[in-house]
Image 1: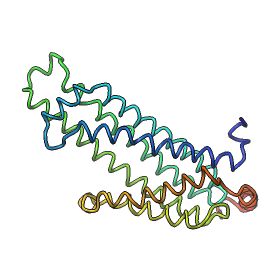
Image 2: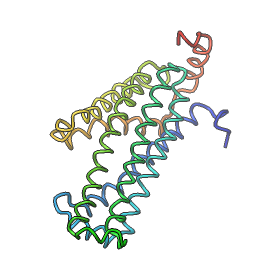
Image 3: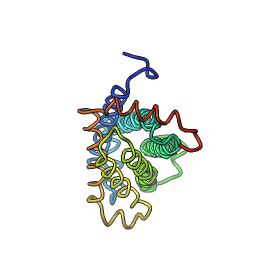
Image 4: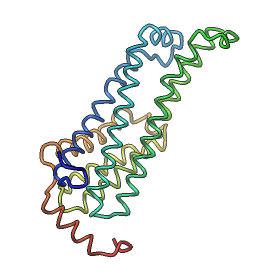
Length: 242
């Protein structure tokens, strides 16, 4: 396997596609586990489910972290791939994505909070059982709110990546358009009531845009010759102009 700095753009694109697919699939177990165990209108039932299926709930937590780590890899590879198009915008996009990944990782901590609250620690004896169950459910709801905030940053990221794809010569412009629509979909979480009203239909643009790009990278990759031509052209332009 070639060193990352020496790898061809086609290899980097395929690798980004693999990590992108792992990111998408990595979130599925956590979503399914929470959908099965967490009942947002019933704190007692949620606490009972989590304690009865602790290994399963922790497994969903682990998959969430793996998915976030995979997206960091996607971010790094996309920065390298789209740097010839516009170095500054590629860096800005990477910053938005990394902030979103950090928020996702932070939101995962709220999945562990119920085990602390519902534990048998002596200092928790001052609370009633119903109060502890309510606190556990509150942390799980905070987890959802934190994740929704991360989607806003990923919305800006998808918009910028869509623009970079559209300006590139080595990927189809339609992928850029679809990624821009995906970004607009995630940006609806700037207004939580609107996002809640449009849910789950608001997921469609994101799945279509990011899913299409993932499949294209896995199956087709990028046009390596055009990427090198655009990279050579970018090297001849002063950085403050590019």
